[in-house]
Image 1 (cartoon, one colour):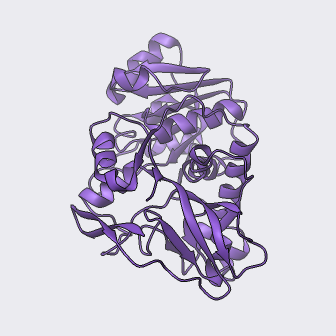
Image 2 (tube, helix red, strand yellow; image 1 turned 45 degrees about the vertical axis):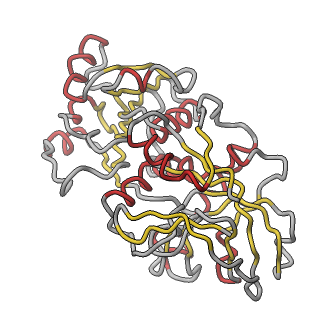
Length: 340
């Protein structure tokens, strides 16, 4: 079998290894789709706070059980992979907050990931496998993880008025977030990006496009009559909060600190505006298993329209080509679907 190995920063190889055995009480999964994202590119090129080297990358994937010692997951089962192994017993896990598990380990970050032909899952890891309908397209099912991250972020604002929302950054995750907002009944969803090419295609239906830098947004909102009118702001890129965003928010408006920020992440905020406007800022990192299962179900039932995305498919051998496509912004989503 083959696997991708990140030995050190910028040292990525495709290597041949022995076929793994079937773990006692576990399953052996043949990968059918594994997606590359901007986080993978960052880990390969710069490292990441949660990355432990050497490592097999890959945290977005779906595969087929081909050997099983687990009655609940017989051979032939198609399953999407929730990217974390969690204990299930700590206070966070008991509340369904598996992303906050005290002993959480993440596929592709601090445990080996999904960029390989076959992945063994031990009995303790079976809770990370979420079955999906056998007829479901793996190229759709593999989007469950990024969509679940969007869903997890949105669930931090249960009482927000679903009027006007802005997503900053028209990459794959920003567009998935916009699609989720449209499907969730938001009246007006806008997406801004400084690169007009990223707004030229692969944008969800029903979303308004704003070709603008963040610093241009206040004047644009003034012309549009949207000053202090946003109920929700989603920065889906590192520079998404590099502007006086609090001036754009309606009273009790919400901000999801959804993307990691450049540098140390230090930003100035007019705290009195937060105080008097009762604004809400909430960080969001990763997703809980319930979010993942719900996102997979949404994709299966076509509740969220992801047909606007046109992913580039590659072989495992060409993973570096996929990294290059994302780096140069020649693709919004790259998916490995050939593993031999």
